[in-house]
Image 1 (cartoon, rainbow, N blue to C red):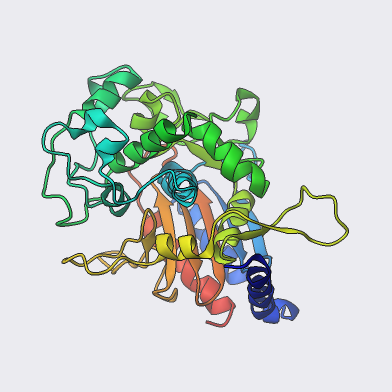
Image 2: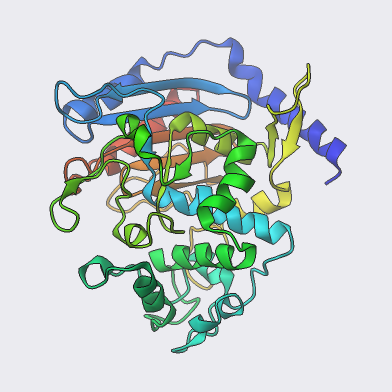
Length: 392
């Protein structure tokens, strides 16, 4: 799209989303839902940002980093282990960038970029199959029980066999996301964390988002699990996901840390069809830059149909899923034209394109142990309450 036309459309979107800015919303009912969940020990801490295409409408931090009375209070600078939210904020975005640059063919076999992957009947698996999680690969493997090095894990994935016929069903898999990250590294010649920092996080001003957060920042990182089965320590700044840990903290499936305000910058860019205010430019007026083309964002965030089975996934992203024994991840009030992702540690990012709503909800629900899954009920309530407060 022509740059001037795109800026005009961007400005119109901002105007359309700003009609509500004169209103004063009461978010106390939303605070109560989260405070009650903390009191019930569903998670010790939480960070919330609610926004639209123009700006943040509400943000708050809740609880303490652990259940101890003397634990540090949560702030909007508290850093969370994003777990599988890594798959979209980092990995899928890196794939989008390489696709736009013409360096990656989504329809090409994975073996085009990782030749050693072609063994054991996997030559038909394409990059798109990885993004759709219909590759035929298994969901995950507890590598930490038998392996101790990153190369052992990589070799195991490269040499694995398929669990089902490629393209026949969805099976959400950490293998898929790891392979996407590996493809990024092989095409770019850079490690995934460096590529994402240079091409995604730095341009957006996401200063609190990265893999391998320095030890000096541990004081503001929300602890995850008290690992008594492998690492024998409370995990603070040490990636929770075992596969990513074996891969030295940088993997396509997990390993990213961030804050809710930082993630809002990314989701705002996605809602604004790739455009973002470039604060680096010395200008009296706001300057806008483009991270992704609007067509690319549409392609990656729209549910893929015609697969021959019931699918709710876009490319890398999830769209509004069908309810199971739990409500939809983004609640009942989000439209079907929404996209997002969740993380095992209790994190989530969701955007409703029709309603121009962004909700970033981060918790450390795996503290001190991963068994409590009440986040599955709390998260939909949070999203439904946001819609109710905003009049949807």
